[in-house]
Length: 245
Image (cartoon, rainbow, N blue to C red; front, side, top):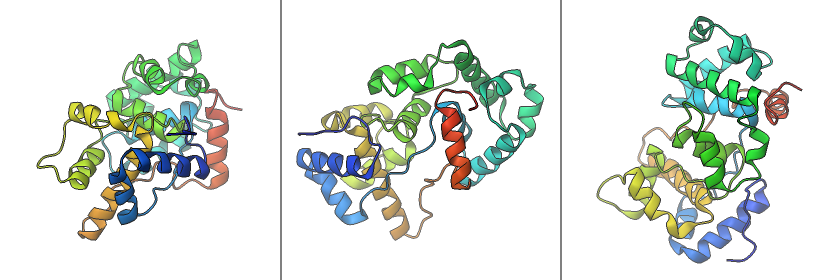
């Protein structure tokens, strides 16, 4: 595979990656032919992007969006310093669980101290960036991989523990049971260094299959989806260094 992008930042990057993946595994081309080209869909990065990913854990899109809206209204700008000094009761009132409050505070303290530099993660390979994120209390493999894929555009992030992705693999390849996270790691080895692009293809196929079968499509929007474009841009700008601009 030639000219393989290491970051999927533009539609052109996505096209190059899809072509390379199709050469290495024609099955993925067949999924694109059936379900359509996956959308680029990038989320904000930095502290705001990490916070949004934490909020979205194990919640429906509607629930995550409602909590995010309350959190963003309560802390504007949503800076790590504000979250670090916020009383847990105030964070609980917006709908955050105790575990998510601890995680957001741990991330905020790590950004303030310099232990975690969100802008530096884009310069690391996916495995190194994953390790840097999961070293922070409360950031698990799923959160790290989703942030790397959706916020930083890492081409090789692979959220093996994502249930929708596991179900997509089952449907796409006619497996008898949903693969485990361990199975998913082994299954995706042949897609390196473009596992994140394979994930986009599979998520798109999952939505296609669920829609065709009359079930609700998988949630793909984020708490940022309802924000006006100007507000999303502001969040992304201040999120790049973890502090307000």
